[in-house]
Length: 144
Image 1 (cartoon, rainbow, N blue to C red):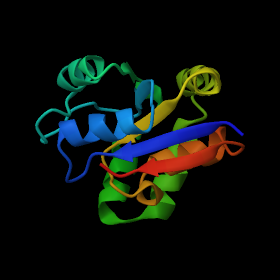
Image 2 (tube, one colour; image 1 turned 90 degrees about the horizontal axis):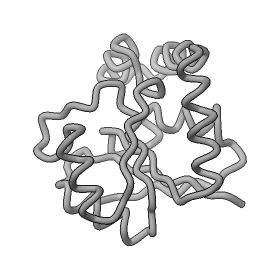
Image 3 (cartoon, one colour; image 1 turned 60 degrees about the horizontal axis):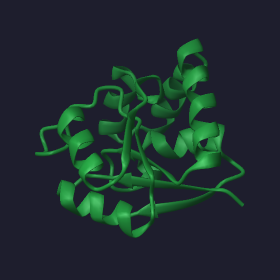
């Protein structure tokens, strides 16, 4: 059975995240944040990509698989129903469908981890993406 890994960087340092990814043998970090910016040091796109490369991990930002503003606001409120509804609409967009096909192919060939902010995958859109795209994959949630 193919496997997909997930990781959230909430309350983590970038070194902890790369160490957890390396310990799991992850080859590709798929950043599925719509906006790859962070107030947490080391987690904005260019800095995170450099840290991943330094750790021997390929970095890919997959913006179309991120959550639009309305969904992010729902997630902050703990409104998972609205997040699910908004994100389902996002995944119907042509650019999201193309990114989903790329991600599925990539995850079939390499060890891929989905990255977003929330520590718990069940509170994040990464669990919704897995349900929609990779229901036949085993899921390993990494904790940095």
